[in-house]
Length: 325
Ligand SMILES: [Zn+2]
Image 1 (cartoon, helix red, strand yellow):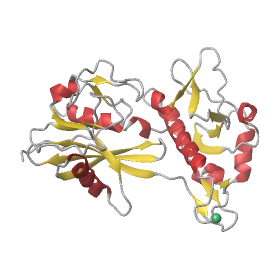
Image 2 (cartoon, helix red, strand yellow):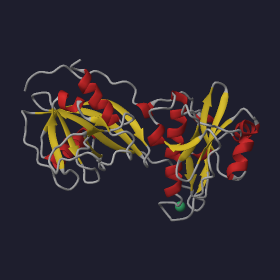
Image 3 (cartoon, rainbow, N blue to C red):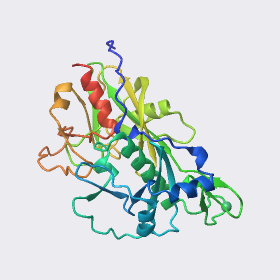
């Protein structure tokens, strides 16, 4: 195998940015929480049932006062303490109903996938935490031990069972995502069944029970395209709260240029691509906005679109591209 320059560190992944202090010690301080909610300068992020939030034309989150939040979702709605920044407390509340009132003039509603790359560090940290908490509360309403409905405690960060006293915490499911290169320093990109022909990304998969992340990288590449990987190196992580993943970014190497054998289940097309080929591909924008229009290749490993800039997949690809610049 030829020797290669080690991969440079990548910038902080876009959804890994944050500028607030989570002040976990305040989550059980009921007097502090009540006082914070009484202050009009406290900022509250109101998330709709579809996990959308109001932003202005510059993609700044439109946070409201506690009184405005009470008016929007009801004074008895659970309040999630996100943390503190610049001497202010930040909370999130969730709308219960499916209806989204029309956005005021000059504002719009959007979700984290659309906004992730545009928000500033404070806003993206607040929104990512809120979306993760909302997804967990939505689907973890009952005790996994006895089936009783649980109660929200610790300012949204724990659910407690009133029957057996067990406590339950927000789920975070580790997943690995890996840029694999061959002996010619080409990069492995692949397409799953949900994507149109031409849209490709690096491989990824969930870490299984009782498995290390490094072993998951090796296993997933072998399962999905039949390639043996060595020299697995950790790069960076990014929360992916859709609904509960933490993406652990890795690089790895294949010996020689092995033939790829897509499993035809999770992976339909896969190929080794040069930097010039990858640079020629377009951005597919947010995950929903590119539907394959213009992708004329009937099948095979056609590369026409790359993952969105907010994804750690794209950051791994961009870091590999930058090695040759
Ligand atoms: Zn229970």
